[in-house]
Image (cartoon, rainbow, N blue to C red):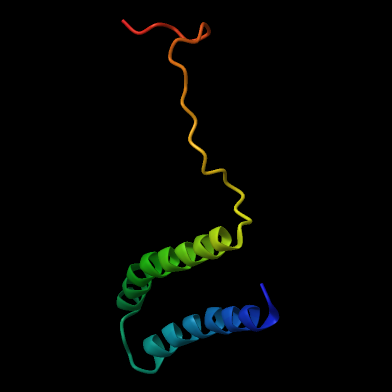
Length: 83
C-alpha cells in the first residue's frame, strides 16, 4: 500500500468516529441510532473493500490462493466406502 492510500485510509478511520460523536453531541441524535446506522453501513462497506482487494490481488497475479480445482478420487483405499 503506498503512502497516499495509507494516509487516506487513516483519515477516513479518524473522521468516521468524529462524525459519529458530532452527530451524538452536537445534533442530539440518540447514540443507539448512530450505532445502528454504523453497523448497518459497516457490512456493505467492508464487502466492497474486501472485493476491491481481491480484485487487485487477482489482476496483479499475486494471489495467495490456488484457484485450481482438484477432483477427489472416491475409491481411495484410505476412505471408507459409502453404503
